[in-house]
Image (tube, rainbow, N blue to C red):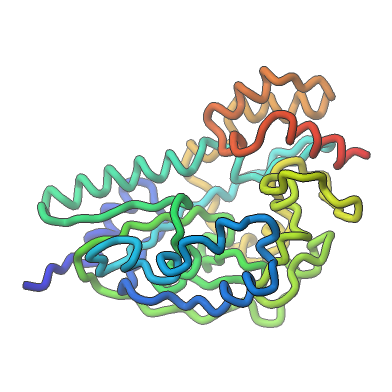
Length: 302
């Protein structure tokens, strides 16, 4: 017997929990030519983990046994940027840790679904497993991958978090959207290091976000951080789709007091490790150590 759950039901319940869009795609072999080319040219820099679990990464059915459907969910973090002139932090890291916030919402959604579909089995993912999240959001008809390799939604722009629920039920599958970047190259032209080397392709060796978060070695002297000490919003801010986008309506992704304080201390050049420790308790900035933040700050202000 075919187990089927209507997309409208899942979307309706997801919107009640604060998600702003939801789509579904059949669990299948995912389009992966862009990933293959990216890895072959070593654009992943030192992120060797991006080449690991390859078969699972391109085929979600090998990641989740019995997978039939991939539901993708979007939620905006597009808010008024809060920067220190001497040390910018990517806006996604200014609010509470999205991994924890979105997982909580998905587990709540799972409980709601099971009240009506008791044998509904699923795994939830929020940037924590080898799954091509942006591509699955494309397959679910929620938008397209822009020239800067970031996902773009027509009504939410590109400052969005993506989450997935992979389940053992079929659903109503969405139609894919056409890429609407057109002849616009604003994101490409905005990058201070020319890291966008082709449509949808980033050379992470040149990327500010990689250099300030993932790079565990010294930052090359020819890199321009654009004032950033954690992550980067430069190419995101350049996107015209953000001009029409809905603003963040989730208080959990607005700047926390700890992060505001961190920026103030960076601006005043009085940053202490205790300030960092307080801020990282709820922020994804915990991915780096205090010493890395200081190194980034010193490099940015040299």
